[in-house]
Length: 134
Ligand code: CO
Image 1: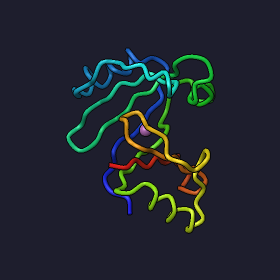
Image 2: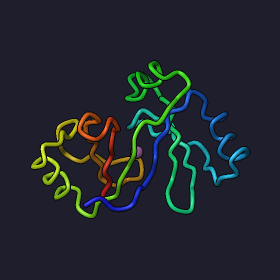
Image 3: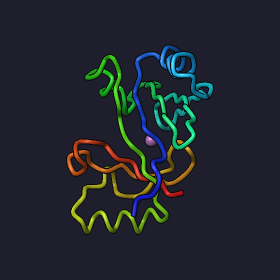
């Protein structure tokens, strides 16, 4: 059911410092920061030949990643995103398999303008998963 790894998301305490690590130390193609107020995050994309790394920093009050950064002040891996062809079919399959879909179970528009859902980390080896319809 799942296809390509779309991105790995890493929450960072300092976007400029994290961008410099990926751009200068690792020599990657790094985007400019983009504020996504609807999602409560500022993002920087690191474009790799086979996938993307999404650097995330909290934006505004009540950011969904603020608590993560409090628990992990140095930053850390936040989630993996896998591509699916049909997000509603994927959701229904996951529910039948006993997996927990976060929120109200309805896809929302993700950071790339495509429908996404998040899946409970306890059902997936301790890792928060995002599925994105591509
Ligand atoms: Co994501």
